[in-house]
Length: 279
Image 1 (spheres, helix red, strand yellow):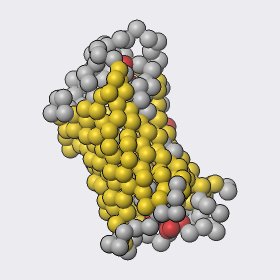
Image 2 (spheres, rainbow, N blue to C red):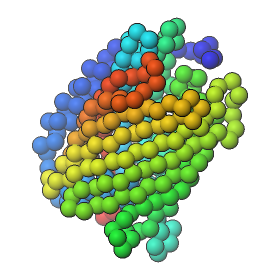
Image 3 (spheres, rainbow, N blue to C red):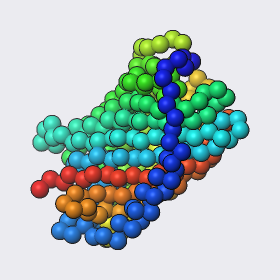
Image 4 (tube, rainbow, N blue to C red):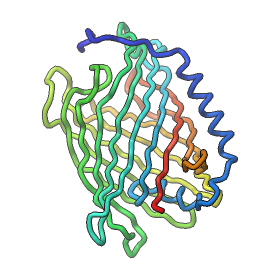
């Protein structure tokens, strides 16, 4: 790998900052989203193809990476979701994930690097109304853009493939799955070709207060190495209000049921989602 680019130290306070944010989030859970239907907003947020503009800021910290379990990886995913009406019956849901990544000692001699990762835009074409059976679905292309600022942070390849989502919401429950596959179409030859499948089954329970408890896996299968990575996430979220800004605050833990050798064992997830419902 090309490690000649400028390397930056990851602040030692990254985990302390994350835990502080979690404590603040827990305190804010008690504040009501006055004047808004918090439960309805939480229900829409549990549906990735809902007609709701939102800007999730998702912080993930993974521990115990590398051969001596001393490595860390922190990721801030900025992933705005923008629905657009394209006809009387169809919406186009755009979601562009932009990761800002910091890694520290993930393998011997790698040092610390902070920078931009590879962006992954996804576009779902989705019916505005559920099917007769109550199913909600969306389908469209997903892309991989080589925007990483260091080889440790991305694949330096262009990729694309199909993405599909299906779910059902009933009695406060949301159950569904999102899947996609990305295959290399162009890019650098010095790194292994991208050929990965992503599977995210999920289940959540929403409450009238706007509280949501969710369980999912974000499983990735690498077809080149025949390797699964399976983090299991348990999170709690609350729709609330900060001044005039509607938010959803999220905190939770992640356990890796399966990971490559020297991969992470556990992690923390925190999130703030800015909400912009139609008035």
